Structure formats: structure tokens, C-alpha cells
Length: 206
Ligand SMILES: C[S@@+](CC[C@H](N)C(=O)[O-])C[C@H]1O[C@@H](n2cnc3c(N)ncnc32)[C@H](O)[C@@H]1O
Image 1: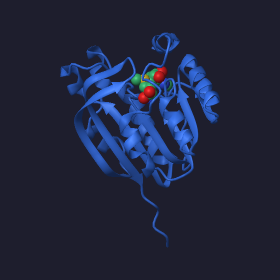
Image 2: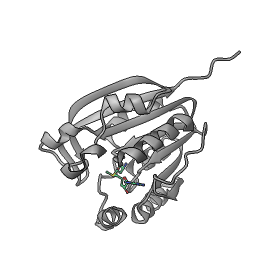
Image 3: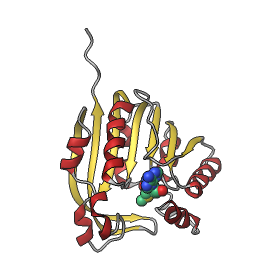
């Protein structure tokens, strides 16, 4: 799969455009100031936007080609973005370290996703916020592009699975909706997604 993504990011331009994901644009102000981790960040549109908003951004992805594009985007826009090349299967999220974690179209095999989501819960600081958007299975009936292929149905997400996997977070916005995408070459047209804004509650003081 790494080769697939490296080939995609080796194409001219930016696979999902240079504007941030629409849901992230709507919701990012809910992330407290500070450090944000973007998982499966691809070629950098979300990391760039968050960095321009003053967050200290770290982007992780398996694609060296995508990460190089992120570094270039950062330089061109005079913002610093830390990049980490890693397979999320092996990546350890630092506990209680992040004011925000952003997961946009981070479709993974279930075992890796569940392990990642356990780490997301631990990785957020109290008061920290997760923003996630991912395609649901209904995407296979939609006319737009985006999301895993029909042969990898278990990589789609659902609200009910996220409720299981992200126990410990308060869901402050959680919905499965249809919306029209206009995000680069590969996310176009009508799509079906789950959207989530979830808060790590502050630990009660003695
Ligand atoms: C659809 S792209 C999303 C890119 C970005 N989040 C955005 O919204 O523009 C999915 C990304 O997931 C990454 N990815 C998939 N499986 C991964 C894994 N096991 N470890 C790290 N990255 C992975 C791919 O390299 C790709 O960049």
C-alpha cells in the first residue's frame, strides 16, 4: 500500500487540494491552542492550515513522497510542520501530549485502527480534542470519489464502531451524513461520511 500512496503523491499537484478538509475548517477552533498531531496526513493540506492558525503541528504518514510535499508546503508558507514517516501499525502516540489529534480519511485495517484509537484516547491531554472524518460503507453507493475500495469494506468507519473504539472521550458532535466533496482530484462529488468532534475530559481534582 505504501507504494500506492507514494505513486499518488508523486503526481503533479496535491491529491486532495491545498485547502483543508471542509469539516476540519468548520471545527478546528474547538482544538485548544498548542500541539496537534495529524495522523495519515498525506500531502499536507490539513497540517498546513493548522500551522497557519498557530498550532504546533506534527504530521505522520507512511508516504515519504507525501511528507516531502508537506515540508515544501510549510516552507512555501513560512510555517514549520514536523513530519514523521511511520507505519501507523508501529507508531506510538505519546500519552497526554496532544491538545488536538486530527484524523481525516485515515482508513486502516480494523486491528490497526482500534489500536490507534486506543492510543488517541491516551494521547490527548485533558481538554484535548479529536477531529475525525471518514467514509462510511454507504460511500460505495455514492457517485463521488474517495474512500477505500469495495474489496476493503472493513476499512470504512461507522459511528457505532467509533463509540466502541474511542471510549474515554466525550462525543460533542457525532454524525453520519452525506455531503458533496470538492477536495482535490480524489475527493469529488457526493460522499457519505462519519464526522466526529470528541473531547478528552479533564480529570476531576481531589
Ligand atoms: C486518503 S489519504 C488522506 C490524506 C490526508 N489525511 C488528507 O485528508 O488530505 C490516506 C492516507 O493514509 C495513509 N496511510 C494509510 N495507511 C497507513 C499506515 N498504515 N500508516 C501510515 N499512513 C497510512 C496514506 O499514506 C495516505 O496518505
